[in-house]
Image 1 (cartoon, rainbow, N blue to C red):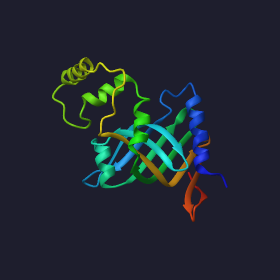
Image 2 (cartoon, helix red, strand yellow):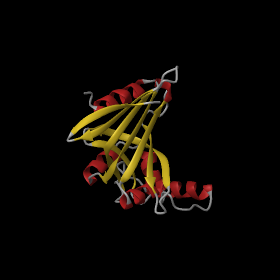
Image 3 (cartoon, rainbow, N blue to C red):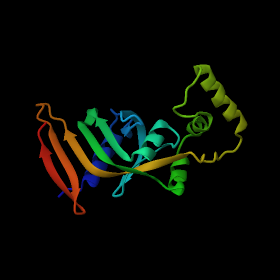
Image 4 (cartoon, rainbow, N blue to C red):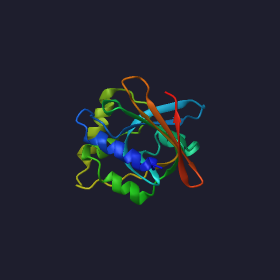
Length: 192
């Protein structure tokens, strides 16, 4: 039996090496909002291992609040240029502050300043206000190392199911659904 986590890493490696994909680590994270509606947005997948899929965010953002209220999350990867779609359903939990710090340090200086200067998902009066906030924070930060804010972290999604769809020109796409049963992955095929 193929381990779907290993299969995913292989697909992701292929996506990252493809010159046709500009954002091979982009993943649509779908959560359930306070009114019971689904809400999806793209983030950057940071890593994946046997424990799950990690992405980072402002913990006070809508997605952060949604996950803290309801940990059921959907992840969708779309790599059209190489012929794959991967869907993951699972339960999200917050990563440790130490792990978040590691990912914070990999962000560009501008990305760090943007995080410090913005209140993600909050209303904005004008686009100019956004630029002013950024420039004000940038002007006041002289340190080469920008400390991670308390409200910036990440989540790891432990998969409850993983579905791979391999596109075929014939439209007879191959769909493989993996679900864990008694600590082992079981695979079943689904019709396209």
